[in-house]
Length: 108
Image (cartoon, rainbow, N blue to C red; front, side, top):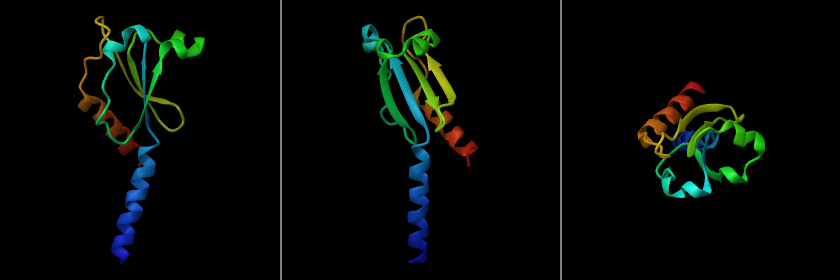
C-alpha cells in the first residue's frame, strides 16, 4: 500500500511538472500549409496562435513564421525554433522533445 501511494504521488508530481512548460506555435494565416505538427510531444502544453491575432509588440519580435517557442511557467523562453527561407521548420520533433526533457531535468 505504501508503494502504491508513493507511485501515485510521483505520477501527480510528474503531471504537474509537465504543465510547467508550454510550446507556443505561431504562424501566419497565409502560411498554414507549413504548420509544424507537434502531436506526440510530451511533457509540455501545446498552444497554437496566428501572428495576425497578436499584439503589435509581439508581432515586432517575430522575424519569421512559423516559430515555435518553449516557455517555462514564468513565461521565460527556454527554446526557439524558426522557419528557414522556405517558410518551414525543418528540425525534428525529437530535437524539440530533447530540449523539453533537458529543461525539465534542469528544473529539478
